[in-house]
Structure formats: C-alpha cells, structure tokens
Amino acid sequence: KESRGKLKQTLSDWHKKMKRQNPHAYYQIQYNRFKKVAGYKFQTKKGEKVRNILEKDVADCLYDEGMTYVYEPLVKIGSKYFFPDFIINNKIIVECTMWRGYDKAIKLAEKIDSFKRKYKVYVVIPNQLYKYYLKIKDNLILGVDKFEGLIKSRFF
Image (tube, rainbow, N blue to C red; front, side, top):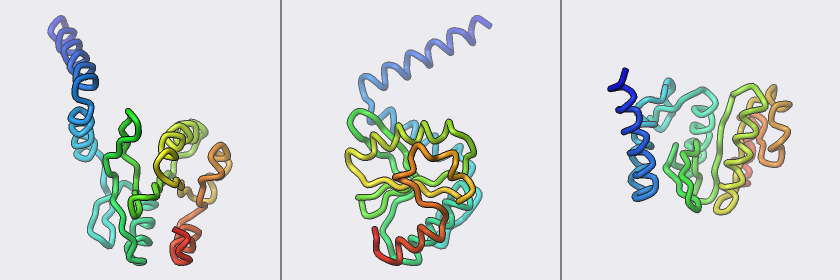
C-alpha cells in the first residue's frame, strides 16, 4: 500500500514537471498513448482506423471528395494541446460526436473557444442529438448527409 502511494506521487510529480519543463514532449507522449489505447473499430476508405461509424462516414466523405485532412492530429493552440478528430486543409477542425447528454456540449464549447483562435470549427452529430448540443448550435452540422452536401458544394 505504501509503495503504491509512493508510485502514485512519483507519477504525479513527473506529470507536473514534464508539463512545466517540456510541454511539447509531454503532450507528444500523451498523444502516442492516446492513439494506442483508443478503441479504433472501423476502417475508412483511406485505410485509417477510426473510433466510430460517424468518424468513418466523415472520413469517407472527405476521401471521396479528395479533401486533404489529418485524423486526430496533435494540435497546440496557445499553451493548450488538443487531439481534434479531423483537420481539413490546415484550416478547419471537424469534431464528430455521438454522445448523448449536455455535458459533452459543455466540453465541446470550451474546446471550440480555443480552436476558434486558429481554425474554423464544425461539429458533426446525428440529427437526433440536436437537443443536447444547442449550446454550440452555430458550429453544428446535423448528420453525415448535411456534411457531405457542404463538402460537395465546396463550402469548405
């Protein structure tokens, strides 16, 4: 029990020290861990592994239209680091979520505020989740069909 307590404190100290002294290296390590433990269950037409069917459909739309994008890149904005779902043409962030509940919208609103400093931001959700995401309605794209229509119209 004592050893676990010491290990926990050592890890906590390491995290604090790394964040303070070398934040880029720290977040790169966290990013690599994040990519390893995530449940990537679906494969896109481009051959990438993604987390859910919504991300797959968005990636496939982008691929079909020949859009240049990166899936889950490590992004630094100000002093914060993020792993958005997609960055398109180094100008647009697209987040995809299928979570039910108002808490996710609150967290996304905070991320969007940070992202807006450098990118245009859109959040793709299934139509039936609209009521949960009213807080970020200006950034919403309701469903993959609407997203696909925006891409085909070269809205992006």
